[in-house]
Image (cartoon, rainbow, N blue to C red; front, side, top):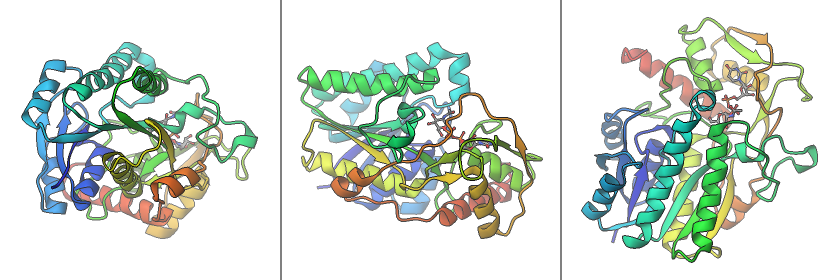
Length: 346
Ligand code: UD1
């Protein structure tokens, strides 16, 4: 029988792509989302891609009663993938309580309900932000690298949530958890039907870049060219969202099949390759044929100079590997931006 997975934040960027991959792998999906940063018509998009309409409930994970209503309505839920969270780093500095309340309470409510409703496992979206700037000898960074003090309330919620999961499991709760530490997710579904929809002026590189390429923004600012990197710009590990989505499917299979050896397992999810901002811009220009207007600007406060992941553990244990190229990811992001223009969205 098909297993049913609850995807919180399932109409968001990574949640929607993961729902598609879960359905492709034969899972039933129940999405819950409060639609604070996404639209309900994403569910139509998912159906268009897979031919299967996921169940959708507009519920806020902070609302314990409403959340319990979902578990009562779908008693067949066997696993959870928890994406729902506030994720704007800058906003989290302005509104820390919003971030602590939303991101911590959502997870706590899910954990509270899991044993009661016999839900086996949860996959939690964490971030390489927990490593801060790794010491040079620790690059590419492994899961064992020290956790550094978070640079923002957003980053701190990821660290605290990892600890909440560890503490709950170690208290004897009969659940399993897999924590995935994402590097930088980019790109959109190749169909151009679902993709990344930032609110207002994007803070992240790829949406800003594609909006510049299409003329919504006049110029992309490269934040710093005087870092200790080969071309002076910052280095990140950019992973195509389709690959990232498939990592969740591999992690979920490990949990539902009871193959996990530890009740809490942690995996880096990246490509293992570091790419600089300038390299990324030049790759975008080459693979799309679009000339990008960009300029070198001062460093952005709080930026990490260089970080990329050692992903051996995910490759070996989860049997998962990022297979798409940076060119494919960037072409898909550009395709999505053009589709938004065709549809008159922006
Ligand atoms: C940021 C967060 C990280 C979070 C992730 C979610 C910080 C310090 N980190 O990662 O915790 O998990 O978003 O997506 O905020 N850049 C430019 N010009 C721009 C925008 C970005 O040069 O207009 C550069 C940045 O300096 C950086 C790179 O592009 O080197 C990637 O930036 P971004 O997409 O914002 O992600 P991170 O900062 O790596």
